Image (tube, helix red, strand yellow):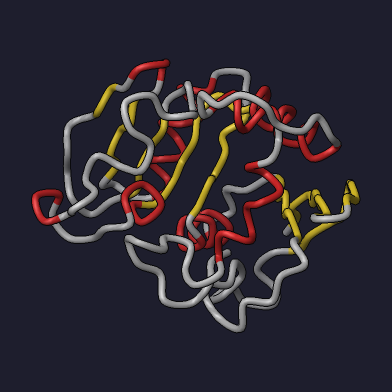
Length: 200
């Protein structure tokens, strides 16, 4: 999910930006980030489908800001996305440090959840209504959800890049904890999109 040596300057670690080059090139991603242009390809269809289905997002503190500890000591406490984040729906941030919700332009409100993954998922499910809850990352947030049995489906975007180390998605999960049933494969030259149903 990220290369080695993550930092504020390289939040996806050394070489980790390569994992996202395909998505940054899509029309839908560029539109949601206030940019023009972009490619209308099968990659774009995957991103548009996910965007249209998502009504709320859960993410970890590191994905939100890259920081840890108290908010006063976080050099990026306002997050990565500026005044108009690309989500346009409620986002629930897992953290050990309480904070009032932050409302941004374009319909994004960041709510900071200190009661754990179950509470974050419950709040996100209520906010999403009939739509899906996306567990965006980082790896630790996704691992917590998988371990707690809170994931119905996983979409993996497999990029042909070898990073030589870094953050692995399935670290810390026992061999019998999660079973994956492949339900869809979409191939592109720069990425393979894999969808799995999660069973136990």
